[in-house]
Amino acid sequence: MSKLNKVCPLCGTIDSSIKHGKDTKSRQRFLCKSCNKSYIKDSSSLKHLKSSDYIFKKFLGLMIDDTTIEVIARNLNINTKTVNYWKFIVFKSLENHQNDIKLNGTILIDETFIPIRNKKYKILKNLNKEIRGISYNQLCIITMINLFGKSVAKVVSRAMAMPEHYINLFTHNIGYVDKFIYDGNKRGFQFMKGFNVEYIDGKRDITNEHSTDLVDQYHSILKRHIFKHNGFNIKNTQHYLNFFVYRQNYLASHNVKDMRSKNKVKNKMIDDLFKIIKNTNKKITYLDYMKDLGIEDILLAI
Image (cartoon, rainbow, N blue to C red; front, side, top):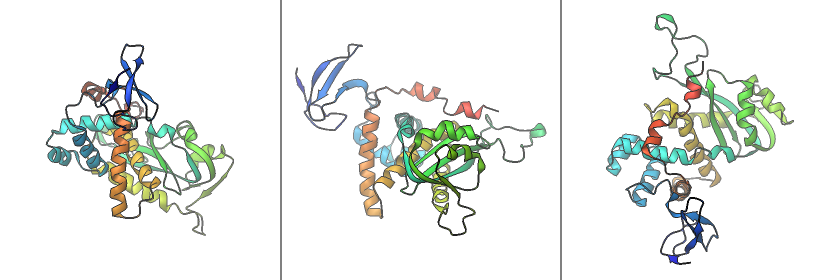
């Protein structure tokens, strides 16, 4: 077995990889003697890109800062189509990120809505009059956050969520829960009752000990994140939420208190996100980006 002058994509150690047989498709595998894990050299989702790692990390930094597509393109001297494609690579790498999140302790639950303005998905009554009430032209997002700032956020339906949305999409995200705090919305009752713990209506709590301010503030940040990219394709909403949840949870886990510490954590986040993308063992092509359906199954459901 010969030694290679390469960086391990899993742990970042230099000159630690050796040839380690081949996979079922006759692709060369390598073993890192530092982390003792194997990988396939050419399996990274970034392998086919012509840009350097340095440029792509600059892109990740701008993306973490919620920089608009046009500004990213101008700063990196690339076109907006490339920016959208690179964002899609990041999104696909985080596609299953929320599946592994476990929330413990006191958990706040709430719903928020964003408007569906795209003509392809907008529902109109006769004479082009919109439907009244909690409109089907609103996209419902359920969010859950614990007192440490760890969270999940998922698109569940047009208009209001149903009890089965809570159960089917969030049960696996609940770890050791002490209590639930909600805003009076009864559609989550069946979900909360399944854990045999206390659940408190924060809007009716006169002691103010169980305020919903934390989740309300979370919604404000989430909507700023979404609306900062005004004009984005609504079908990509869950992609944006996955990235938002990753970013917020990373910041929460590092107890950021000021701008100086935030900048240090941001640099660590760039490296962490870059590793996640490099470890995505699938080449994500521009054609994949063009064909991605996002949440069209929800948008086209009536």
